[in-house]
Length: 548
Image (cartoon, rainbow, N blue to C red; front, side, top):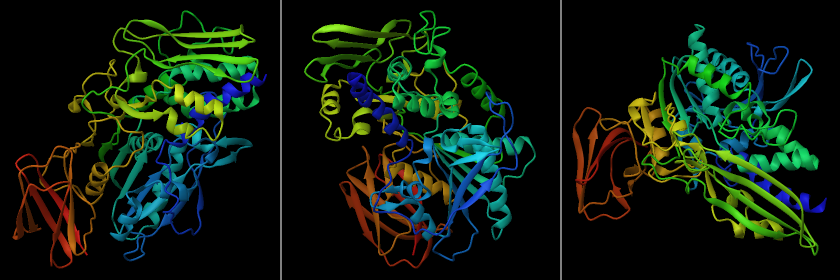
């Protein structure tokens, strides 16, 4: 029916576009030079929870040599995240590393590091078509193991690898490195960087899952069925989502809710099994493990539990309109109606679908927890000229939801998504944590500087955790001047900047009166490595600086 088609477009467009945002939206103006990619096949097979045999995973990778000496001697592997249908190419992944008119990969290549992008394509193994971008995390990890072993064979010198895993890519990297250690396979990897990765699970509001599945199963919309099968019912989604519609269905029904299964539950046969397997492996112990997260570290929530996301009437045509009401999961211990859809024909209701949700007594509903966010309006853009979409966007009362909860990105095992994070309970050695919730995958001056410092062998002489306040070297390596950004509430009455040699000799010092936002400090230093110290009485920081 026509009204079903229009409403389906409104709600599934949000979901499918939000998957593309598992990493930054690529900056089309900053694409790498294209050479060619190579195909790599895992040497270790994997049999999934619902599979009758093993399959060998496949991947595509491309090496972007540094622009310093053009020799593969300092490889940094960058993984893709969740990407059903392989919508992101290797070039997209590279361009997605852009920030402020620059590109993270370009910066590292100028410093002598080689960037290796690993993509998960759609491929055929043993006669089965496998969508690598949404396949089992374990099978993709086996592909990464093969790439690590190949790079360690091909590289020049003894420099150990760095592995950067954004979003689901962090799970792939963690699993691969821990698996290698558990099976006495040499990783030759010094640093693992997890970027807003769902170590304790991811979240897509159950209200949206119910709605899409209803149109797929009850209405029989072919496009809705494709979205459910390729996204929600993909192995990776069923392994990651902490609340999955398949755990709530009435026995024998593909869409009706079991009224006795209202508490959050993962996909049966997938979610608990995967988390147990991941927990059993733990984290790699021979690497330095650090994390970037996009969720608030001080407990700022994403809306509030049980709040209304949208409650509106959408006019489809002269005779048909639809009442749509979606809510976040409720406060701890309570139950609410999260999905309520009524189709009206000539003013009379002709169809109604309801779904309820109950929160555990230990935590409010995860939809509003601190975390890297998904955005309904961003995903829908301006509505693409579709008036129904525009009306839906305009009616939104809550735009954001918690996609990767802070506790999950920190890999803290707790029954309360809203608790203040105790970093001593996290397995990571260092953290970059914002005060405010950020869109999942956001690259900021703070987390870029944190990552660069870790790759360059760490920040010297300061705390290993970076928060929103502090100083950032806008460009490193620097040229004729040091451009220093002042972040958050760091501005003091005076700021003293000092440059030391790596042997501790003071070379330059200057005091600035009430600097605002940025300091520009000219120098005549020779090319080399220096230590830049900044102190304004509020924050003290030392940054390893490279002068070209």
